[in-house]
Image (cartoon, rainbow over all chains, first blue to last red):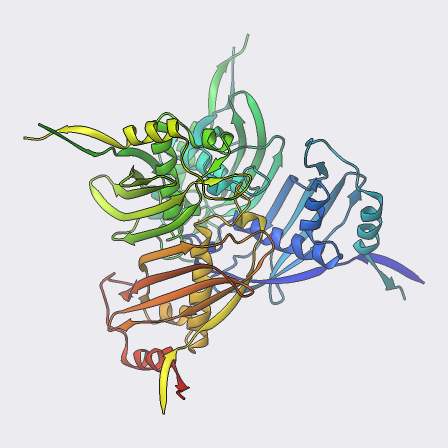
Length: 145
Length: 145
Length: 145
Length: 145
């Protein structure tokens, strides 16, 4: 028997001074930059880099974002950004994130994105071919015991 | 008869090029910078600028943040950042935010902060005097009709 | 007798946590954000906000920037950003900057900007009317003793 | 016969949306973030990551920075950051930078850093051992024909 689970794509990022604040840790807003890195690499891994969406007259602005901070990321940490897509709608896509330093979980987050038509700014359904590519990519078959 | 409602403190911020991204709008992470401006000014208005907390060996790191984006903030917009504190715990404080352009509501958000001891990094109760100052400041008496 | 000197426009900015780094001072790249604030307000004061340039199909990308850091700007400092334009060419404009905390000079800087046609990306001469407005605005008459 | 030339260390960085501005290119201040990445990797390659300097009670704040922008870096570009150290003084070090997209040169820059004692904030000579390590590392022997 088999089941499907969300495909997790991992990226890495080395923290610079410019990411930290005077508390000596990565500034809270900069986790959203990390989320973007993870999202970009998830989308690239699906076979359709985000720039391609833009060429097709679509954009995916963020409608909602949330982050829970558990432990601080520090200067020079080599972070792992794990990203997956728990939900995909007809004109939307959600992403979830984990920020890790080795095995340590530093933060978790999520974002919701609308699909918009670049010229009109109106909500737009995913083009069918792209919807199928992303839907297929979103999950991987896993063997159940 | 009277009741109390949360005291709202308003700050302004002029959007620069450096806040925007190539979608032509303020980059989503930069709303957390706006939230920080609002929070700083709320705290200053209470009579105890945040730097004073640090001098007393406390810090207020962000434990959670969330934002809902409704309309885009644009280059050169003069934004209003409205901040209030809906909840205050014995070792924590929450803030809520609205980002407005004139009467238009662009985004809403919230953040949760723990009170930590700067040297040990451990959770710390509010000093009593400060707790009372902030508790009193948090709400304003409003006349009910 | 009279002479002319460059018109200096002053803006203010309150430093937030997000501007600092773990050295406890404003991160060096963020001075370029301050320069942009100063430049925007100089341009606005001349009577033609930068957005108007864009509407007329022009942009002023930065060709060069330089900064000398003398003293550190700190969290919660209320900074003054003083901006003036020492030189203006047929298809270019230069700006100079001082970052101050009260009377203390924290940093000095300069930037050179080309005038480009937004659609072609090619170098473009200033439209005559705009050139005259900016040239006139650049300097003020000063009484010589 | 042999001569010495500065050792060039190359790092890579993938541009995200958060680096761009509404002109559709990387915002000018963000090149200083790229410079920091290049500088960090040069220092790490010398055998002494920057964090080690801090542990030894030293910091290397930026005294001057300059950048010339030749071509625009764009969203999703995989940039090369080339860094070397043209000059090293008894209490200072200079770095030079090139930002490239493949063979295309996008920007050049330089920065000057003072060596400061972290606790006193005063200028400090390089510790001898570290000075020798960095001096040796700075250049590579090259065969002259």
